[in-house]
Length: 308
Ligand SMILES: [Zn+2]
Ligand SMILES: [Zn+2]
Image (tube, rainbow, N blue to C red):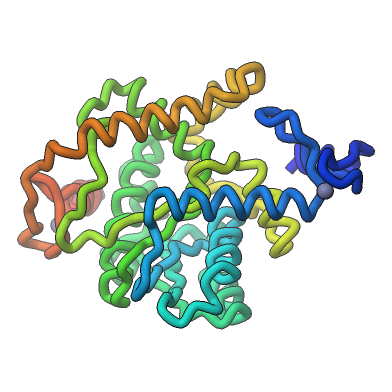
């Protein structure tokens, strides 16, 4: 948020209209006022959707909606883009991981109602009989983000499919995506880097409209459009490898503003190279969800329930 405050009080002028600027884009060299920032932001998100053919006639788009700044901005953007279309509908899904004080599903619900978007909440407690707090209690914090991430994606997919959704939208931004690619590189995870985006039965295809937009611009958009500020990270997230990679990449990208774009392009090109290599598809005999050779969600649930 510090960066945004600095931008808002700057006396710089918009390079397009000379009104006061709210943002300086290091990678384009442009100062932008509020209106030109909105126009630039929304044009980029629309272009990403168009280039990937992510929205088509008849779609029901489930939005993974935590109520935080990224998913708040996404819900607002998709609503303003699609609410006048009769052939596309939206539904918001909130996952309650069971981390008191971090997520409040009722606030997310209220926000969705303001926009007149159907909302549903699914919880770790109900689906798995265990919360993230309890997982950390039993297994410590070192792997909590990995566990939580796998279980949350699994639950979102099931909920989206049950809601009849044909797409599942995430508020992931350029920084998130660049970090993911760099993490896979640092782990030497060839399989993940080459994993194409071919359709898998039972898996609702994922879309990420903010893929090409830096995190600080998503935060600024969320703040100016919806008044949402960052409600803080998950209390367990400092345990994750992502936090380290994020710090490293932020430091590097300060002097090399194109680094994140380069990483995301690398990720996309590798995924395209891997698109032909379809892996074996299975359906988990326990939970009925699509998975690889073994079901990671069920594996994690086995592990954490035996950790008492
Ligand atoms: Zn302007
Ligand atoms: Zn399973």
